[in-house]
Length: 199
Image (cartoon, rainbow, N blue to C red; front, side, top):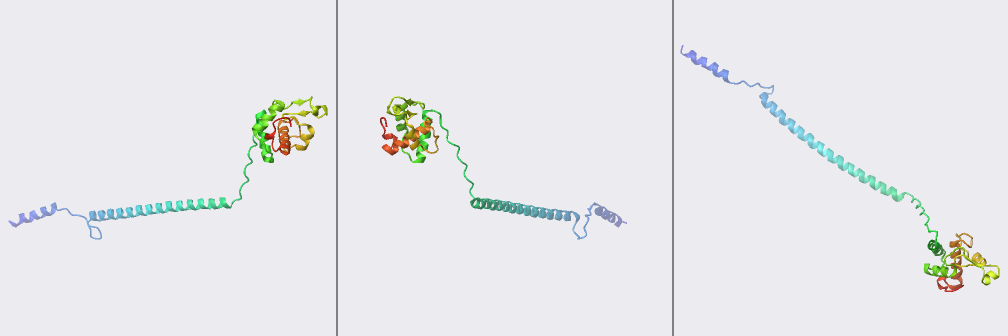
């Protein structure tokens, strides 16, 4: 019975060998799991690439839509009727000699009446010392019953003839007085700037 021990050793060698389970396709189960994992990685990478491409496409599409909207707005703006410009706030002038002269110059400019700040100021200072209520009760006009009045010492008939529309019809109003006198001087002397004495 010497052969028995050798047979006994064989089952022991068999017992030490590991039996690996096999799947239905004949691959060992561990190899199948590895193949599935690799396939999952490929699918995941493919899905990720698809999502990336889709996101880039969406960004590009969104950018194109934004550009189209901008172009449409530009076209609409070109075609839209122009809104009437807002009227500028009326210019403000100080209620003193400087303001009266500046306001008068703006009115004179709009009416085509020549004259300068210096020409107006010089004549006003000589005629009334800048007093809009000045009245001359001693010259020939006063003796004839039509005294010279206001900043530029204008008589009523001259004021009535050369009154500038858009100003009050009041001989004592500083702006009305200045513009009427400048209008008279423009007709008689070419400009108030050419007047250097009583006129």
